[in-house]
Length: 194
Picture 1: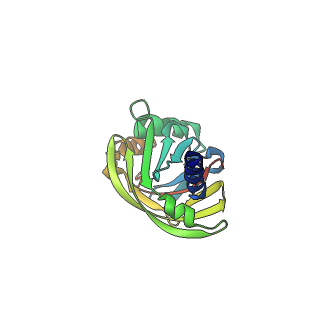
Picture 2: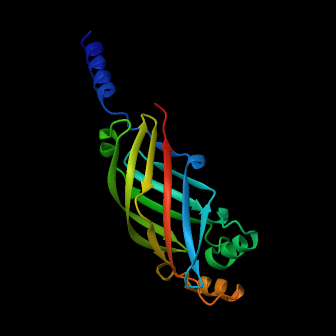
Picture 3: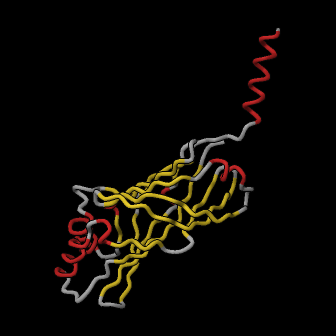
């Protein structure tokens, strides 16, 4: 009888704790976009179609961007970006990792948003660099979480060994200039089962 009571007590204790389930990225409700600038002041918006990611039970967040899914609205430019800039045959993806503590998520009320400065690391073209990303995190429901960049994160091609690819793009398109600095923004939606 004592063993049964002890078992019930343990189960009750676990039921009363917050549920730390894995949050999965919803690709259809997420987007990572960037802006390229050519000829000094001509800006064009692009995005990636395929994203994967999750927030694990330990708070580790990881988002993988399939670079071959780049969409610039011009097919030949997409091909050049894949081959000359991203070199997707060698580096098929970019990976962003950070930490969003489960305590932070659990303390958000449904419908509430809170600012969070993510301390993360971006891996791109075989190079890794620490980045700070100011975000708004919103608990849309008990099973839906949105993480949105508050302002664009500036990624410089030189930091990731991409300047040669930028120069190749500039040459093949006969452009006087293409900026090495690229603003990147995102809306990431995560879902979990109850």
